Length: 468
Image (cartoon, rainbow, N blue to C red; front, top):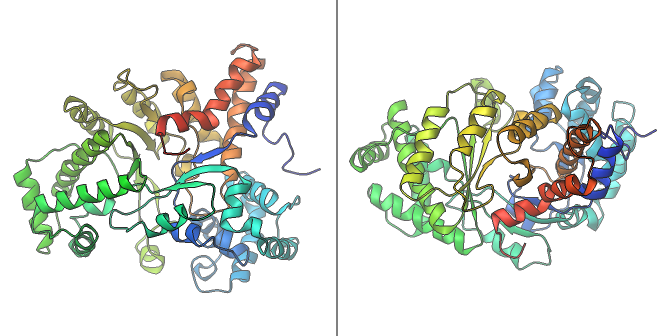
């Protein structure tokens, strides 16, 4: 019997009816991911499992390190097949880690492999994948078609010229690919070398000479408009914590000038400068009808050796324990008072923040848009079965699950689309269990149509992406 059967994770008759009848065949709207736009534009063909599966996966690198695998076989220069073999040997040790579920679900959906990956099956899996990856249907365009991805939003720096997006828009790809505006580097006055280099790139991209803060803000606003012209309707911010120590324009200008001169901003100065810009970004998003995504709570680059050896986003980040609520309240209220509160999706990386974030967002629902303020799906360390259920239960208890915009991949890998299936199975299992317990009506159509909306149409109606 296959490990990943038709009824995987569906532990009741009601759950199976919900999934197979209402969720399984729904399209995907992947409104937040880190897929490389250049690889989409050229319809990349992957040579082997390393390229499509292991090349940028910090989840797997963390598991490999925990299993005693040297860095050379994680992010180093070892042969790609040797890296895959190290992963195959590690997989049996990931039992009860979500990587065990994800890995086998991905191997089945992409390559039809029905067994268990380990050292004894590794050669079979490698050869099977090489053969299948040579076909057109597992190039990038084929993958997006196979999983019925109607639209996806990448994550793009404001200095990007969006040439890859323009090329994709002219291609034969049916999936709509949109940029998302991610201006995190604009806040980096605490790192004057990085900040100065980035400001120079912003000057080139905007064709604006940047002498001081007014020029800097004008250049960012120009890029915001440029992204809008190219279909962007979402912004995104990856922040340690919320910022709401709002400075005067004069103080923000002094912090900017000081960073340009080479002096790193103090922690307090960085926080005030970030608060100043986050207000502007929120106002611009509201003016253009965008949705703002904010990711809060990751403690990044904890290990100096790892950062120096492999760089950022390589598996040396963890959950942070900041107190967000007071600043988050002031930030949202300031935008609201000034008429600049956009649609918003808020994601937390620490489960302690579930109820504080979800209830805070409820304060700012204004009756203008159903589900205007969204408590986002389980993110990063919380995008696994248990934490998905925590998020769904929290949202259900203090908000409206029926208005939820559903799952996303948040991934750099084209092998991640079964994450949507995984979420849908978890959702249907949770609801099916409550139907059979009498906690929800035994009305398949009532509950099933809510499932269907969460899978796709809620996000389509909420995000208003052109042509989706």
